[in-house]
Amino acid sequence: MTKNTLNWLRFSLFLIGVPILIIFVSFATISSISIHKVLAQDTFATASSMVDKGDALSDSNNSTGALLYYDKALAIDPTNQDALVGKGYALDDLGNYTGSIMYFDKALTIDPKNTDALNGKGFALEDSNNSTGAIMYFDKTLAISPKDPDALKEKSALTKATKSG
Image 1: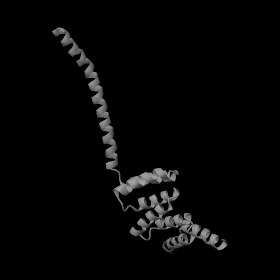
Image 2 (image 1 turned 60 degrees about the vertical axis):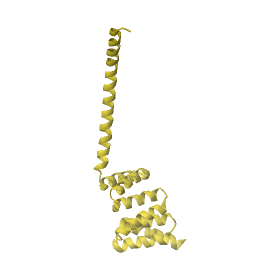
Image 3 (image 1 turned 120 degrees about the vertical axis):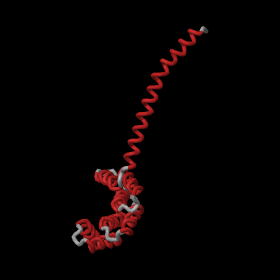
Image 4 (image 1 turned 90 degrees about the horizontal axis):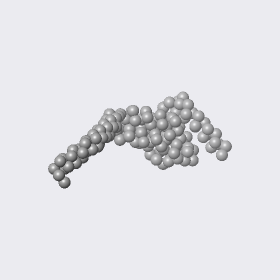
């Protein structure tokens, strides 16, 4: 090959390589920005905002999705009452009564007067066919909040069922 041919070949490869390099660098930069954006969102997320997202999913009957956000909230703040109770309800909805009771107990260890956790444990016990235990937890709620509508309704229904059955 002649010197001119080699120079022309190098120049051609350079011309082909530059657009490829530009595309590669552009893609890498965009990917990097996207990754940093996601990391920044997770870094600045609060336990409360994660609980809010979990509650929204739970309200739309997506307990599995809700669990992911309650877990994120608990990773940020392991003692977050709302996340513990939310996870307890989500597990109960999915039929994991033992897990549900465990999370309600964790919430009650932190605050024994948490009526959401007391009711939740009552529901989980009821769902696991422990009517006596359920009534006991609804009674604990009513001792703190005598007009709690959920505790009144469930205790009444369980008491009637226990008497008739």
